[in-house]
Length: 562
Image (tube, rainbow, N blue to C red):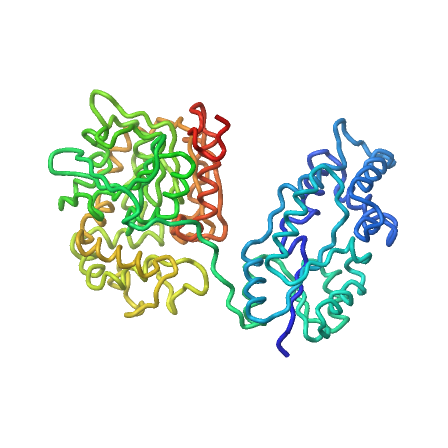
């Protein structure tokens, strides 16, 4: 029988990480025995501190006072100076976050006629930070029919009576209910009553199980505001006679240069431009050389790192960059490591550099760089790109098909019946061989964006973009000049756990060459980071930019105190 109602647990399901995570962290930091705080909370069975607080018989402040006393009185316990029993509760309240994908799934179930509720083991919060809990409950109530708090009901999980309260409130029978919980001791009484019980280990698998059981497709992630081509200013800068860059810009303030990868466009930054501009930056997204409206000279040598970094007068843009952010491209590392003068008489100062997915490795003497590529199976496509004219013929045959195959998310619902295999490309005779002739649309390229990309590649062709891959030995020889240098700029690397090409392990040891490197990781993200996880990436970039020394925040930044 398909369920009529879905009940979600809160801590560890919709709200993560759960309290246990912060209890363990406090124990570790204070050098307390493992499980020390949990034991102090649970001691006494049904009359334990935790049980009484969850039933609303004592408040959170009373729980914390008694827990502090118990910890300090525990025999053999060496509670350190400065220990506070309130710390894990404060951190839980301030740092735990609602799982937005599951919350959206709950709202979708509600809109499809399912009854929905949250069954929360909670306490009466009378501490100074109690407004945070009230805000959280308000957000939950916008997505589900009912939020049932144990401290209001007078009974808490795993007591079977709390499930009976939920059944009565929803007006359903146990066999009509699906319950999602993260602990077996909560799942067991639900099953005993006749409910279907779904253990939640991670959000992704929970979403897939929910869809399988209910038949309701979970909604995609809420996307931040994106710009359309007509909503930004477009500029051109001549870097030397006959060669120019096109860029799209938004905002005023310190300048940020955004560099895309292959096969992309400045429009790959459509979700980041408004966020960066809104934070008080002048965000400039380039069409890289050979792409879009930038010049696309046919000579392979025009796309070597050395040649690309020879910029005659970027001052025509109106400002030296205050930072470079690059997606799937090594150009920012090249600029940073070689400290190449963009203008012979007046080098540009780049105070910080960030990279999405792409790590930095200095050139190694005595090894053929093409042979190094051959040792990495997933880089076989780059060897296929080496012969001019071959890959161009395949990719330009049907540009829409090419883009719909190459630019896809790693999510199961966006995958093709046959996966794109970057290995054995030369042996197969092409990158797209064996892939569908008429692939479905990609969630990363909705029709307006896909149409724009197609027009751009029809105009520029693929020769220029592919020429970037055809200077392997030249780039290696040039980079050897800087092999003993370190990049001493503030730097950020964002890695993606599901990227099949630029795997996070390739960045191991980068700190030896980039001592100020900061790392951020998006585990549930594939190759196209700024399109797959735009909201998370925007948050990461803005947090990093806010922390950069020594320049102050732009006056109109929402986090500025000026």
